[in-house]
Image (cartoon, rainbow, N blue to C red; front, side, top):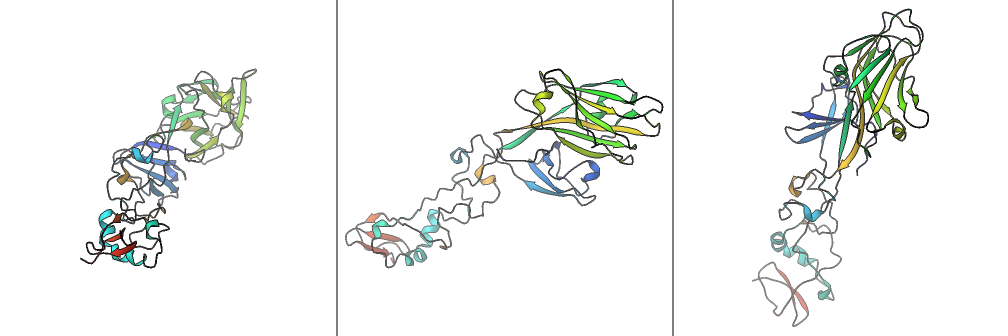
Length: 340
């Protein structure tokens, strides 16, 4: 499976290509993958600068184990750099010039039936998103619903209140997740939030192993954003097996100081991600990109620029043949270029 960064995000269900305005203000980050399912194209974010986002079209190829012979369109002339049988015949004079002076013509081989090969196979990465099913207000109050945290940039946020006078902790909110498939270990928490305070807010996960308890995953990632929504991706790979049980997981936000009534903590999006490879993608050889590249160095070039280490001709009991053809006369052990 091809390697992708641990914080890669897949945006499915898109109906068109991304624009330059699909940028950091909309929560997109470098490395995001955008799937235009209407036009069957995918794009990788190379730059998320405001108003100047750079999305590069990419093509993931699959088809199970990547067997070249399993592709369709293998008989098509997709590789312009490699000669077909007809092109070899029409360019035989230039090829024949390189054969002059060969002492043992029986050791020569011309590949007239060129079989192209697939240069690279990369499994498509499927990223599964889990959003919260519910949340509990252990300490504190809020405005909104869990559904407000399930879609990024939908204009709805769960607003958690800081209230002056409450003891430490000022608020504690516990989010419950389900449906995490066994064997597909989550490796990322995604959070799109805004915060107008400057207090410590811990992100914690429930540890199901040993004596179950809340573990602090990050105590410094939530900062004052001036009320502007920002995106954070928190790497939890390698330890997530402690934090899932029966497909369930729990994330908690804990405010670790007395609150200020003018401080607001808003959650626009909260998700746990896991990724795994599947064998799907392009199956028609002619639909691949890069077909004009010289990826198959085992074949001769149509221009004749690559020398043959061995050329083998079919014996023919004659010293004459059609103009431009190259043949080996088995009667006199000579190579000829036809002139008829």
